[in-house]
Image 1 (cartoon, rainbow, N blue to C red):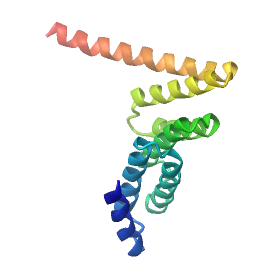
Image 2 (tube, rainbow, N blue to C red):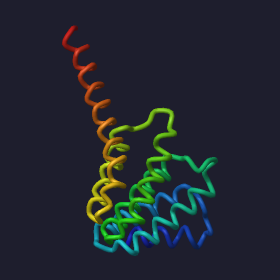
Image 3 (cartoon, helix red, strand yellow):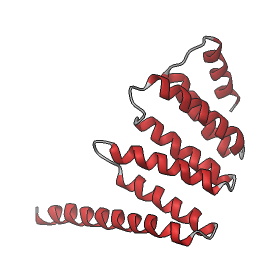
Length: 154
């Protein structure tokens, strides 16, 4: 982890606000989470988000979606379920607007929201997210069946 921190410090001294620094910060935050330093990771993720927002042409970049999902996971490790869900929802919002949405990841994020809602007893809140997750899983299952049928007919 020291090497990530060192690389980030070099970029910060240059006063660089670019994609590579944001990427370094994201990777540092992932490492911090893996080292059970989730609260530090949250701060680092937020710094990366600020940089991405200044360099991306829209607020709907896939890089932001990844970081929002990651920060949601970090909040989850901190047992901060409400903030966790806020960031999972931000990630979903961006991912659904993509030209080719990654429905597996979107379904997984819905599942995380359901899980956190159930853990804090918000059953009514969990229900619509659970229904969305089921619809996505059914769509993915149908797509897999259809693609395998095509192979079978060859």
